[in-house]
Length: 275
Image (tube, rainbow, N blue to C red):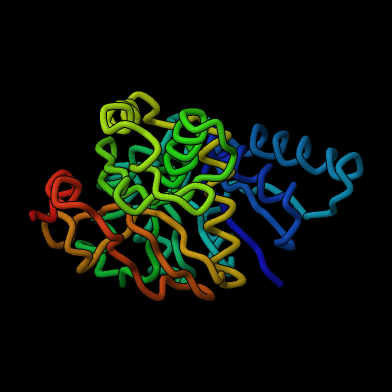
């Protein structure tokens, strides 16, 4: 049975748990936080909403980090007391889980956890296919919404790459209703949309929770579509070992591959690829 352990019952952790429960694709969700009364209260709140929304996802809470070792996917989020897991404390947590035998993929949901993701690969030698950063995924939806508002359309296909808080939209290949966006929107308006993305960083907890839930489900069940998220490895964007957001092909319990999207020379330079 699929289960997800979320470290931290703060706003991001709780929003992720709520989104997973509402989507009702995983069997169980556990909020792990040292402040067990608050974590238990939030778990109960989500659980009691189940009969109203018509879902029966099992939601529980624990103060014991080792209770997560058998989870299908582990999410590193934010604690009730101290906020996002980061720095030495975050790395110590990941190390503790690895030493305890946890082999699940790890999703870093906090917008400030880019360095923690990199340190987990560099210092703990965890394989890149087990590590994903999900907060930046919410920016893709923001870019699509802004482009859709510019065009007056609801469906826009585009790719966003980069390292938070710097993002580059691949306008040269973006499309809407079967036509290229660059043929319909002036270049200065597209530039304005790209430059505005930094103002939407970091996303709010509910946006991050929704984006994280999609990534978690892709890891558990596999997915036929590409998912934009942070990854480390030989991606060709920035220095080796750095984390950047690119489209990922996600299979069961691992990242299968990544794609560098079609970019114009200017977009490649802005993204750190050069011309």
